[in-house]
Length: 477
Image 1 (cartoon, helix red, strand yellow):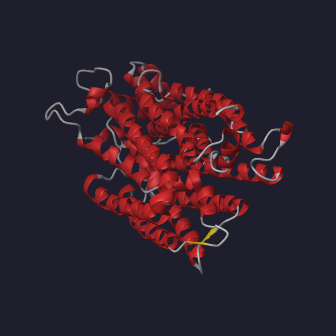
Image 2 (image 1 turned 135 degrees about the vertical axis):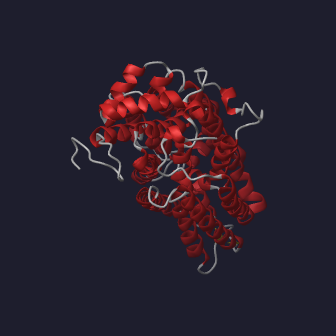
Image 3 (image 1 turned 60 degrees about the horizontal axis):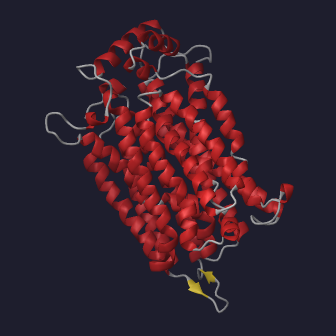
């Protein structure tokens, strides 16, 4: 298959323009990179925040968790805005928010200004988190949609790892995150300012990709939609897809609205909406963002040096990318549901192991905390296996499924509600962790995450339907 043309995919007689699709996915997933970088940059800056703003444990929780307030609002608003100004329009707005947040957060002179800046960044994170996957799902063929949608998670982890590496390099170069770097300003401020570079690249790259053809049909712009689909799949396939998209919309042709989530026959919320909310919430209740947001603090709490803790973050990031690449190879072969079940089981076991290791922590005469014997190694190995299980399953698959599982008429509204629930759960877990780590302690906290991982296994078995290989116009619920 050459870059200029494409051959049949998985037995289909559709000939697709892979070069164009790859370019679109590459640009759209920069939003995933920004999502990851903006989420991960806070990891390693916490000592600087404590020193600059005189923060206690609760204060750190609010400064770290501020992004999540914006993210929950951004996710909900983006799902609805995407039906008004388009998928690309929302992504461009998120790029602007990333850029502004990076500059203001780095320059913040008080905790209040920092929190506002992080909320603004959170609006961009929330928007990118839900719109990039749905945009990708709406411009890619069903046979490889899972693989291409999973690239979003690879880019999220790449952004996280990029933030970890940048933080590590800047801290090492300055002699610590609170030490002066360029312009006699502390390294932790430069950790935020660096984010403005990929944010600007994201904005200008979005200018070269088209709007989603499914959005264009909804807005009555069928000629533009046909032109995009023709470039993607050829004229004959474009004719068929425009007709299918039109037929999949509401019978009375009304514009998508939030009330479409209610089943007209029963008067209740559609089951597919509850499935989407469950996927979104369980992805957070297993505690993954404790590793992403508090990784350095977590490992320092059990005796690791700051330098070694930051290196451990990088290791987790690299393993996460490898796990996501495995998902790309498997998701369109064995399906979404089997990967979710494997992930749930693996996370339950590894989280329980981490909880056991943390339960053995001892405090020395000097007040330093450590894990006796080989328990430090056990905790490190189990925690990284947990990261692998998450990123080969719930990490990418939740976003893949939210982008494709909802029928066309309710996709924007369904994403708004599920995305909002995801970020609320994220906030609850992330903001509560610093206090929970002190009392009742890390062992009990990780036992709770293991419990939710076990429950998620049974949720998937009961509530989640396979979407592998199905066209978006076939989705029901």
